[in-house]
Length: 275
Ligand code: SF4
Image (tube, rainbow, N blue to C red; front, side):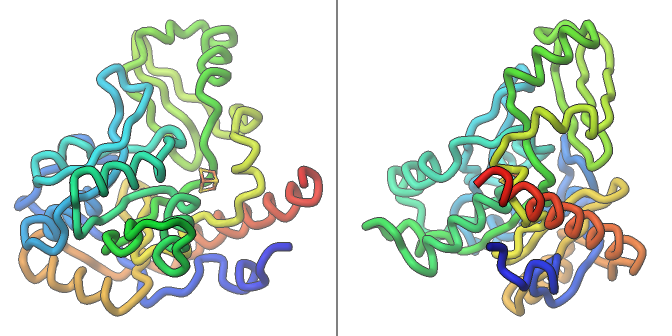
């Protein structure tokens, strides 16, 4: 049921893997790692290569999320930060791109969202030129997202956290950190029962259908560059002083592969059980 290439190439096809950091030319405020994605989007927008970047932004309270299309570098910097929940992304995105008549959009999303948009670009399913307007797909690494209400109830009941005080939530590979009246860090495993059912069957950790996949590993932005176009853009962004890049070390690549393989195994286990 699962394509064989997932087992053979857990990270999908790629050209190179880099550690990417924003330079002083771009100063992201809330980035989870080195600010590489934000800086790259700033380069694309400053140089008129895109007219908008679609991504998600947290609401002021830090819990809910919404889709935003950032049209300026200031707006891109404001939306920088971690992802928290699955948002009704594609419907809203299609609507926004068409309503605002955007012609060249970069989309930053989760692997499942990027997969869907790639499919729309390659084999359009609906009568819309939405896919043609998306120029660049950036996928975030994703091990799963949580059922919002249930997880908040759990941390209230089990850990006595006042959920109305939560200002920010940081999701990493190992834990989820809730920051409010106090900081509560819970191991990812303890919360795994609140992962969305669909995520348990999802084999794609890095977003194999993106142009670039990016994730925070050890406090750094790691980018998996999947095609020549993306490689060129990265070189140009570096040449223009927006980012610095260095080859990712083998140990980190191995860590990402292990995580990807774990996710494939989880999906292989759950697909026959749940379908
Ligand atoms: S685990 Fe898969 S289905 Fe779930 S949010 Fe991440 S990419 Fe989407």
